[in-house]
Image 1: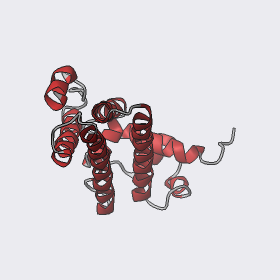
Image 2 (image 1 turned 90 degrees about the horizontal axis):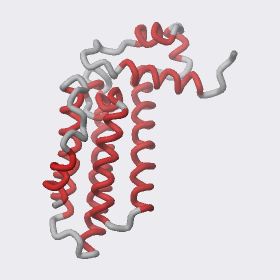
Image 3 (image 1 turned 120 degrees about the horizontal axis):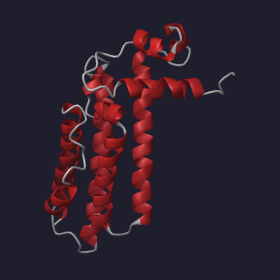
Image 4 (image 1 turned 45 degrees about the vertical axis):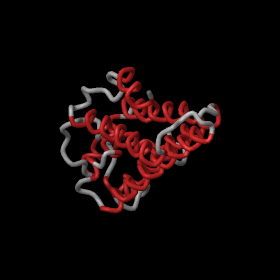
Length: 189
């Protein structure tokens, strides 16, 4: 049965993400990816011009997913502190559910790839920090937050990245939301 347009592309990205879930995996090659999909490398290149473009597709998926969730949180919740807290929980939960993508988010999977991919992840992280900063500014305007929105957003995104790092570096054993209730009190009072 023939695949619908875009299905093979999605299958390639899903398989790439699945291959990245192995904590001690070797560098992902197009040959290994093609073998996992039971297709030729040429078949991969019919959908992506390069391996870097495959990673870009994965980053685009991550970015669109995260920001659709951030936008939903912000639309459903008017309280800025609650927005920031729910955003942090969502970022931790996303990593927990998507270990391979966590390796992309921390740059671990991009070490031997085109440097523009790491720049793209850095930009994504900056945008997430800006979203947290905006939530905290909303809280300040409502007199619900007495901290510094810039500094506090930097601490929150650093916390998230640290939890992502710990998750990946422990072979996905130390889950990002481990001890969240205790850490939440420290971060949000």
